[in-house]
Length: 301
Image (cartoon, rainbow, N blue to C red; front, side, top):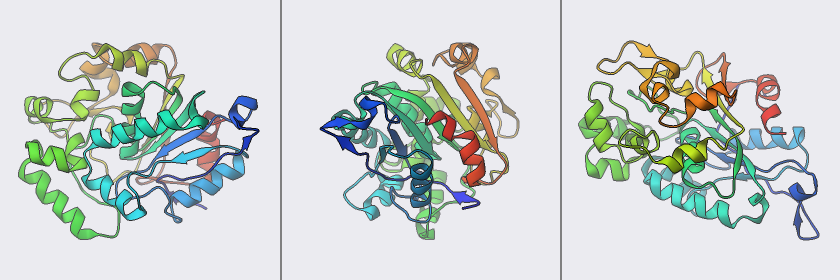
């Protein structure tokens, strides 16, 4: 299973006498959110990950989030369903799942990484223990060089729409990728127009609950793909981004005002050893089974 293309996977956990296995000393449940153009149950991506985790952690309950009633809807919604509406659906689903009430780990792939971070910030119950972001774009993107999935017309449509006006009300409400589009040349436009990323990154003001809830994580693991040709800039996967006012030079999380002003509590988390920065020597969402077993599984046990 070398070079797995990640997304997300689904699985069920055994219930003994009506009591979740986790209560009886079993492994902590896992919630996964797939990336753009993927779905909860793709046998060539999520299915492979499901089997891998099942083999390595017997008895684990894994909830692979499906946004919509069908696999096709799930894929389409990764492009076109307002992220905040998706978050409402997911938070309700998590709150009603009896297997998760004592806590769970979260693992998000690509855009699923920042979406699960939003779950931590907005929906602290049930509690997430560890958040693993695999290729997530936590400071957004400024570019759309590649697009996954089989429908090239969707990718072409998104490129044209973003170029036409990413921060218009209609585009923000109906195009997922516009909601984490971060234009470093127009920071004020981004802060005022972004209905998702600017909110969860505390760009317009400080929501103390966001900061407090994120700090409840034991570990926040961020995986950056060192040969990423899809995410622009790839430093966003480690919470870095372009220096404001230009689109060539990047700065790290630690150099950003988000960190120095500690608007999300990331500086405090970093000093406490809660932030983990991992590198994967591959293109976007490409890594080996061995790398996954060695670097990711320890945070799921």
